[in-house]
Image 1 (cartoon, rainbow, N blue to C red):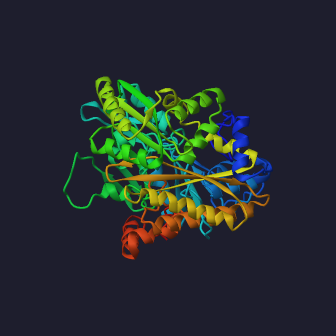
Image 2: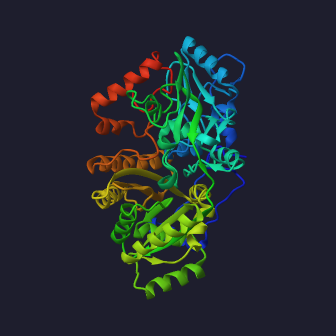
Image 3: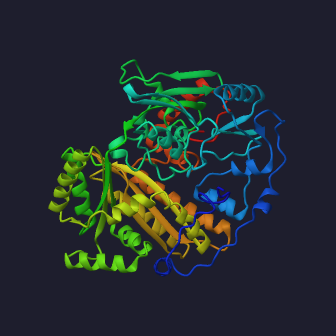
Length: 530
């Protein structure tokens, strides 16, 4: 069963080795285990609904709680402490597109606010109800999850927008195809959610981000249906499909999505290369891209993240042997790890691998084979479960991300980490910060930073510490010329910083588009733009 106050299946645990616990304690200090609110206690706080009974709509307390929060750090604090100030008044489970059209007509007529709900994996508050006088309805898309059509000749597939990552891939693989979109939230996030937040997958270097994969579809809005026909390319004015991408439920509910698919790869390889420092790794990655090679993934960790990854892995004998080998080759505490993946026809995989490793060698990279890369690939969707374990041990964990050009990347990493560290120092606390480049492009890179710190005894104090660090990091991103979000979207948490990127006129233009499809403002209020 899925956890109600954490990540994933409650029968899956992430074991933290004793050596890893000692490492973390050394970074931030001794911790005390938090005491979480019980499910029964939180359910008792769910207020009386403001909605009347209706077909496909539940007003019971448990589904309303399960749709009240996502996976952001403030969401976790609220769920774990039981301090939840708003709940949806009901949860609808449509089974057909017609159900969604009827629900939106009903909500528009009655003044009910509507929140589209995919997998509930948002880390920026996309699915959270905000306080308002009107009733709030969460529309759960999980039953619209089937493969509607497969056009093999056109390499196109149409799905119900509520399909999760594993179900989507299973249905495609049965026919010999893949979408190749693997965000960290793959287990539970949905196709509709990927489109609504402009998601990026771990192997997007080969398959593309969701804006490349999303070809068209169908959106139900409060004023009617919006059809998005797929074209290989079009010069017919502004692209309405692009308006739907990243719209975060403000225009309506995506019911169907047509996506561009690929034949299943003959071979996939994931290798690990270590560099003497971060700058050598950056230059190797840049030159792989400049050479026109097409790996499916290039993920470069800073020295601190490399050390942390090895420390949390356990396997002390194996890691010790690796450390000795690298030391003999001249790599010390500043070493940085690159995970490099290849996917496709076996002959191309061999060629790209050979050429890419040639380039890493020129930048003093030491190739250590496939063992660590394959372990990462095998466990990549288990990593979010570590967050549960760390919380239960007394550690808070959050991530933030941006993207900028190559010239600015090292300064961005330093600026974000310094801002977070200084913000936490005001509380007399330490924070462990580590960063990697999760997605790379010919002209720049994403920057993905993780922060780990001690939970306070008082949940409000924990939240205050997080807010200070989040605000400082967001200001640093703006100051250093990065986007406020590379892959997590805007939601609630990033909205205060969006105008710095879009400009006041840009924000008005976005709001104007939304008002055309939702003149009464019932769709996902308080998200993306005010």
